Image 1 (cartoon, rainbow, N blue to C red):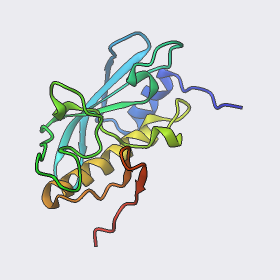
Image 2 (cartoon, rainbow, N blue to C red):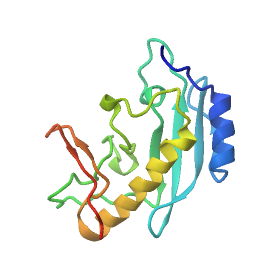
Image 3 (spheres, rainbow, N blue to C red):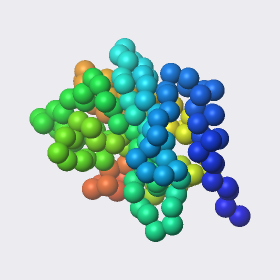
Length: 162
């Protein structure tokens, strides 16, 4: 039997308890919410948005399939000469400004997140880990955050930073 979908109220309550610096606002559509606030990577704080809407039959908007996290500031910096990774690693590229592309925090094909889970207990922690990996990538050009690359179809294991 499938687990039940967490209500928006349950999501908002859990976020307020677990991450009070993330403040909820009305979402883009009905039955949706966007949280805004700061999360820290390794050394810097990043202002992020987390958009989520309850699943609606017949709608496949990304924010209704999974929480959509964007870094609002400081802007993510593409590295167009990157050899190991794309110009921005582990994002869902969106135009016109790829610096606002949603972060790729988990493998949707592996069923690592579903609407029965609390965003505050999954997505926010994954975001903090992504931000730390991004800062390391900025310094070294190496992505240590793990993840699967669509083109290769192979899971990349996190590397030890030590």
